[in-house]
Image (cartoon, rainbow, N blue to C red; front, side, top):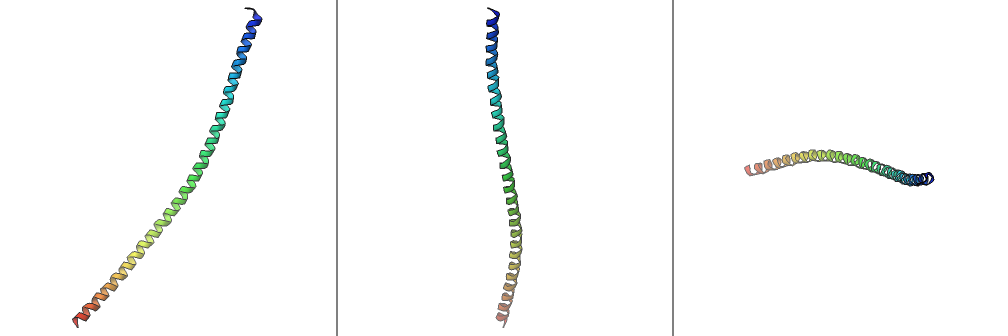
Length: 98
């Protein structure tokens, strides 16, 4: 095989390898772009979820405070009702004693 043909065959093989390598580089670039977009989307979602979690935690604390206040109020009302019932029992007992 003459040297000229060998050189041409090597060059053609090298050109094909270069094209293949170039395609791999472009695919890698596209994968990197896609991964970065995915990361950015995930970071946006994480920030949105953190904000929602903060809001829910605030609502939970408000609900807990309201529950405590309502329980306290219920106990106060219960005490007043029991006091009124005791007074009514005393009145009834007094009337029956007359």
